[in-house]
Amino acid sequence: MPTYHIWTIGCQMNRAESARLAARFEELGYEAAENIAEADLIVLNSCVVRQSAENKVVNKLHELRHLKKERPNILLALTGCLVDADTARLKKTYPHIDHFFKAGEQPPWLEKPATLPLPHHPSSTAFVTISQGCNNFCSYCIVPYRRGRERSRPLEDIICEVTELVRRGASEVTLLGQNVDSYGRDLKGQPDLADLLMELNSIDGLLRLRFLTNHPKDMSDKLIEAIAKLDKVCEQITLPIQAGSDEILTAMRRGYTAAQYRRLVNQIREKIPGVAIITDIIVGFPGETEEQFRQTLDLLSAIKFDTVHIAAYSPRTGTIAAKELKDDVPPAVKKARLEQTEKLQQEIQTEINARLLGKTVEILVEGRQKGKWYGRTRTDKLVFFTSSSDYPGKLVNIKIDKTSPWSLQGKIKSGKSNQEEE
Image 1 (cartoon, rainbow, N blue to C red):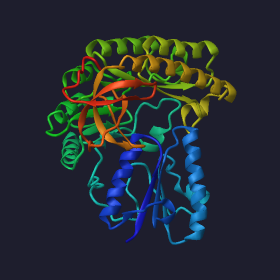
Image 2: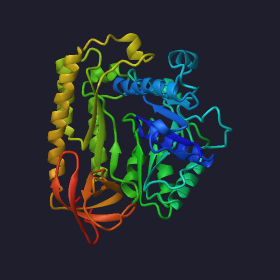
Image 3: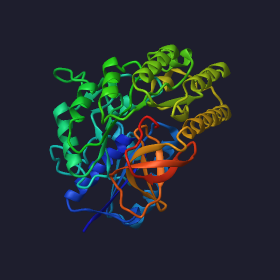
């Protein structure tokens, strides 16, 4: 039986697309290879949002060059955001790769079904893409150039897919889009994300709903109300700020000010008590001064996010920033600002998570790691516990007896979890 291996890096959308590719290959008679060197078909699902991710992809492509020499009959393919319209250039650079296809598309050498099949045995937590592409064109972002303009999937198709994933064993579904707040604007009748959440909330067997990523300029009062009232929608919102300086936000073409962002956070916290807010920060953007960087630190200190994804700016070829702005913040300064931001956020997360010591939280168990079960709370806190019983896909109550900035540990407890305590 032929074998396949899919190497994936980057966002949850890449992970979701890789899962669909795997299901398609298995439908055609392939089975997963135990390691990449033994596979007859290898697909790299790439990411170029950051230079560090692109470097990993390029390194993997060079590794495959040697494998192709040893085994010339293997089939190699590249997909994801490294693939642009100029496939001739890619073929010249990587002649050992047999096929190139864009993110979200199907392999060109296969007979195309109407849609990629769903995984036959999804994990307890599944990802569902509800829209592709983005219309915002933030100055630093490559995504609109690689995934195109926004395209929403019909509401009915998403409902059917989530229903089927739940039937196959998924307990939690995360809806994915580059900007989920724009969902439905291009559809007949213009259903929005709040409408979709209300429909999905009624699916029997579905325990939890999440979604990402939101854009601060597009998040509506209707959506906030839906999160507050729908019992399966988790109290967790991913809301990238990117910078605390209005001058930098303008240069990034984000479409809001720091004050507007703070008002939105206050509104969310007023409507959704205990909500966890996750954000993204870019340090060292072109022209960023020490004072502007300080404004970002001040914003983090004031808002106290549950999680912050931090990256140093790296120019992406073809973006507005790469074309029009000089990458003038020295690498050493970027590194120092990155470390300073990480240190501050670690202190904040230590403080937030310490409040859960001795509390009982409800988690959805996702699997085992190093002999311990792990899962996440509704507010996306990672929790580990030890038990000899079998728990994948189940909701369990854990009393927390150890906290850290990155995860929690505890012991399983019978009875209903105290959501007020969480």
